[in-house]
Length: 436
Image (cartoon, rainbow, N blue to C red; front, side):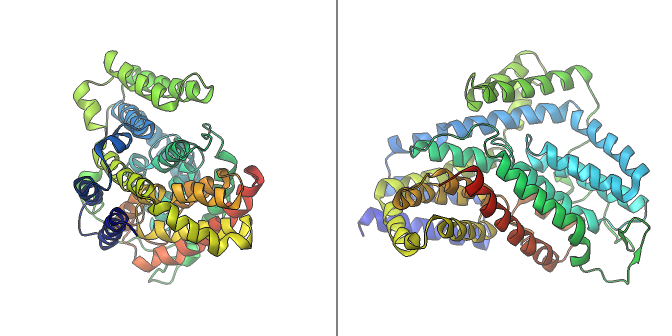
């Protein structure tokens, strides 16, 4: 092992350990690791320019701005109010319809603001019709995560994995190319949540059952307007028809243009974000507030570590050992094992971290097996998002964990079977739609 490889490995272990301990901000940890690699000479500044100017970073930043404009226009609040009207009239069925719609919207918009807006609504509506909100808040978070797996822009993970795979020489995914696999995973997960999640969450009182088959429980005392910190709740925005129409139209146009191949999503989304500023839907200061720099810097810092692994040869050395160990088992078994490893890592680390670490390995593993890399890249896309067994593996889980007063083991009891079901669904669907 060379000196630079040893330094890179030490930084990787240190960053992973710090992220698991969760005592420091994830973006600060990632940027600290990047700084050590740059100062040690393991990577040169010219080699990591891609980390801060990659198409994935540009696309994410622009999509965050467009989504923020839609939120500021009151469009999301209006949609949630429509969901409240439906849920109050249809009871448990209406609540599930609202949550399903939230999952569908998450295929195109970041799921965190959707859950921030919808979670207190689901809580209040379920309480008003005599249902325990704990029956619905956890599935709400899970459904939005599952929805994000269905398109290239549904989650930052998909954009990042696609960008890194392209840099490794793999053909890019189109906007909806991952959709068949994502839908198979989402539908299997949603069916499990609908039929089984209510039976797996532990409730202290003896429950009663309503006529629709949902469990009735005394509602726990939950502080109004708080998910750990009241600041995470977006204030209600007054509806501005012109701004709502403009932001929605720009978003649809950006996605459509990228889907039709007019320009990459980074270009169409960036142009759309700038257009919203020019036509005064939002001003420049508001656009900067919508950028979510903590996510962008986390991704950039982890990309630097990924570049160091590639440039020092550490990734190739690890992949050679991996191919030697599982290569003789065949590509399907390799895919199942690789997905499982990605799933376990995602339970411990952020999805961006797993995407950066495993995408180069996925490409190299496929090359070592002499098969198409797309099945393994698709496995990273799904596994790096669809990890459900802890309340802290995904931001929306942490939000509903506090709001619903769940126990940690509630997420294990529901999330672990959901992990296994989506693992099986993904490993069945991936070879069908992305042959080896």
